[in-house]
View 1 (tube, each protein chain N blue to C red):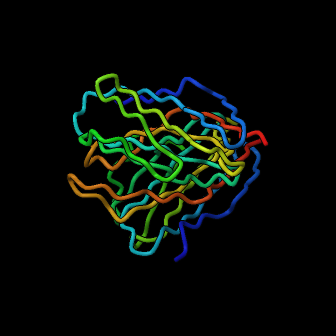
View 2: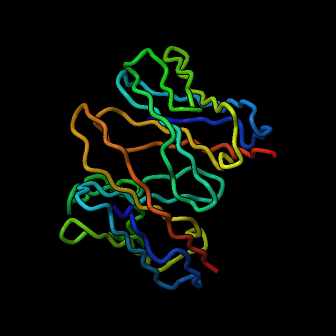
Length: 117
Length: 114
C-alpha cells in the first residue's frame, strides 16, 4: 500500500513569489494534517482536515497561507506571497480518524523542503 | 496548553551500547498519549513507540522501551543494542485523548558511532 505522497520534494523560490505543495493521503484516511517544521525544531500543526472540512486552522497564518481539500482526498497548501521566514519543511500526515477515546496512528509523508531566497 | 521539552539537543552512543533520550511534558489532561518518533535524513517521521497514559506498564517494542513516570511527567526512550540505522532525529510528542493533534518537542539528534 502506498504511503502519504507529497510533491515536490524540494522547492526554491524568491521572496514574494507564490508556492504550492500537494499531498495525497493514504487511501481511506479521512483526517489530513499539514505541519511546518522549522530548522532544528519539531513539526507544528498548521491545519487539520476531517474529510473536506478544516476543523483546526488556528495556527495557519491566514494572511498569506491557504489550504484546500476538495472531495476530501488530496490537499494543497499555498503560500502567497512567500517570505524569507517561510523557509521550512512542510509535512503532510494522515490517519483514519480517531473517535473520542480511540487512537489511530498518524502516517507522515516525506515532506517538501522550501527555501525562500 | 501542552508543552513538550527535550533537553538533549544531541547524543551519541557506541554501536551495540544502550542510550536513553529524555523528555518531559506539561499538561492538565488526565487521559493522553505519548510518542517517540524517529526522523532520518529522508525526513519521513516514523513512529517508534507509543504509551497510553492510563497504562502503568511501560511500552516496549523490540530494542526500544520507555520509562513513563506520570507523576513526574517524564517519558524517556531507551534504545538497547544501538545500531547504525538508529542514527536520526528523535522527537517526543504528546496528544490528548480524542483531540487528534500532536505536539512535538524540539528533538534530539542521535548518532550511533561504529
